[in-house]
Image (cartoon, rainbow over all chains, first blue to last red; front, side):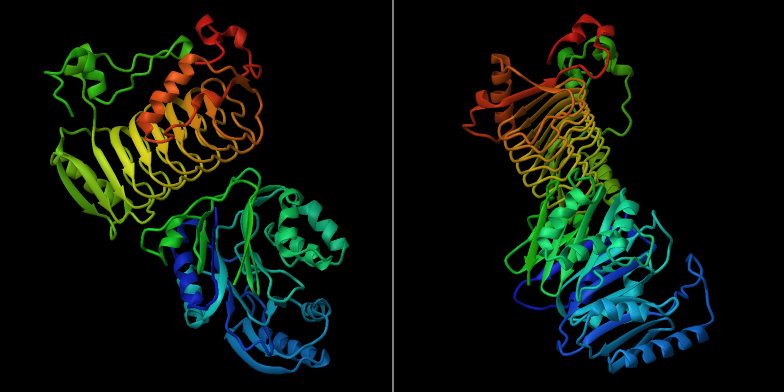
Length: 313
Length: 284
């Protein structure tokens, strides 16, 4: 199953961290394994926000290998050295969990080159890079992850999130959503469904230099869209191409620094309920997600098969 | 519910909200014999008075608690129940086997009023996936939009949505009528076996895919036909039935039903030669 939720405030910012937590918590029954957030926060836009993990010591219930925490410290030192070598000074650093970090860095060169250098370190994965994107994912429900990472305080314009029931790959952070749209700053994707031409697409995209960090079929959507945009397509054009390029059943959301989009497969096999007004768009796998932030009576609808929509902040 | 001992014989079945559609051929079944009414016990039913009205606020209830309370209210004789603050909760109003006026002041989530047999339901809001799934009899009116699988596998009654509906409306439908004032998504009437679907607006791709029987009427554009779904000529009976049904549904005023497209099963997908003559007809 899995549950997805997203919202975008148009022309203003809000408590998106708290709002998305409420929406995802309402969808907990659809995905108890892990929860992820891609929040577009009111950062100053001067520095890149680099969120990365150096391991997955997530304990019982996870398919990840438990490692001694000292290994994480060693890896973190190597990351710091790589950043120095890349000419990316660390302006601020936060250790969020033993294995997860948030850095503010200065960097002005190619992000693909940057990412390959950082991820060449064993078991280091960049969760996101962007000037407003804060991508957080971990095991547990929406409230647990929000409390662990202090997400309730985050204010911003929009966000997407995911409550995961693992079906195609393991219960671990690397397979959790959202996925960063490597190598583009501030691009993230969440997905509900199954993709059946994953390996064909993955092989083709890897031959074009794109990178996959997991074996989760949903990661393909982020990579597929990133590759289209890398070749000059707009976000919406890439999403429309995904309707035929991706095979299977899916409803997915994609967000950039100033937009939020949704796409639904041509069989409309996965649910989506949408609320749209002049100042807010909110959507989720079930209406109760929207009701968690808009309890009053509102008009909602299900987008049809093959529908693609994009909204700006 | 009406008093079965005093009711006219011909109205006993209807009074109990039982299936009244005449079936033919291999699927013919005898659902209820009014002569045996006195020996008939229908679990979960209550004598209710439509003039006895109450409100139930389900804001702080889960669906099981709310449904149990509805059942208790019916047991207390309430025949008109207004549900306040449903707020998109799932599975509200399911399994009601009673005559009842049930009004939801707000939207329902998944599986709203599923497996019902007899009640008159009005939802002053939207419904999620699989509304009224397996409905046997009664009337359900949705004032706004509906999600996918609207009226999945219904066997009788009238299911009406004044807005638009999602994909696979009337999937596996076995009887009754589904009437939609707006548009419908892909695979409308997928594998339907009996009954009628009326869509006043447009429909998506694969209309009537793999339908065995039944009839679909479309007022707008058709995305594409599914396997074995074919157009059929509109008859006077079709037009009269549509005119009547739209009035009952309170939608489509002044809609010219004679210009609708009628879609039936081509019956090429499986061996119809083995059927009885009554089942070889082109449409209901």
